[in-house]
Image 1: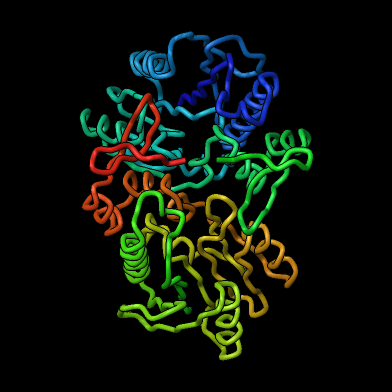
Image 2 (image 1 turned 30 degrees about the horizontal axis):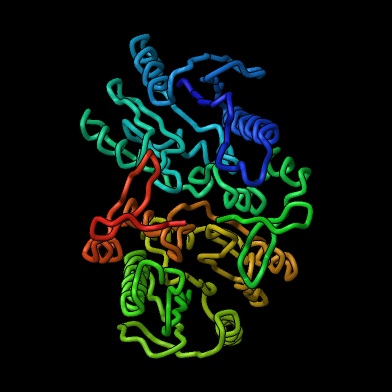
Length: 215
Length: 215
């Protein structure tokens, strides 16, 4: 099984620009990435990185400047042509809540294609054992991936995991990291001054005591 | 095991007021409720309703006009004083994606207290086998419920389920129902003209072809 983590090395996490500076977004994205790599390793896998640019890391690195979908599909084609053993998994680099247990359930699921939906129509993790399945991360990718599996005649299993469904894109996602995270990303946010802010029964976010807009 | 579904009979789902009329919110909330009751029945349970007012339904009904936390705690105290068998579960009435399988995992989990977190700090379903555990649904309830379990010396298990984590409060939640629902709530939304709207790679919502604001 090849386990690939795609990473956008330049200007990551732009939708956090209201609460983090560019340098902070860069550091936070790399912290999220390290958490995901650690969880995959703890689940017994040897992850590799598929990055748009150089990254300082200790796992095998492929640099491919093409957009996510193209880069992943090139890797899938190459892997299955080379007779990859047990298929290929693609796990997003910003799954701050991913635990070894949640990831192990993904890898243990039956089916030619296994999908872990993300909130808002994304596909936060997938695993394909079918040589013809290709990804399309644009738009409502979970729906497109169901159709693609159908197109190539692959059976599909969807895993039901809040931890895998939570990717970190927007300020509201930081609330989830503070509530449920146990990795470096949560520690990073705490060190940067972020805390939960409960006002009128609604759960929000503050930084250094100042409430932030999370919608 | 008593399985209780709290329901706000008057002016439900106010945060959907930008996309649904008051009468529609009322009808949609009752559709969500019926989906949850059906899923609980399919999981082998006999749910009962704890409502702030009269509801036309075929399951046992308790009307309690007090706020959610007070009403649930009164029921918990009463149930454990009466020597309830196997504990009490409290499942929210707006879990449009709850499947019998996801609910069965909740009921099968070990622990004096079992918690299913909702997005944004809520507790979408819980199960207590401990007579002294009490709820507090105000604010970041998942955090408060962890502390409460600790206070009474109860062991805690958290179930990791995207389906149980998704309650339907805001327009963005309707996207999840359209993408992942398989019950009456999804059919209701489709009949009311709602569809997914994919624009510039972002997944949103439209009604009768007109894009809606989901943030």
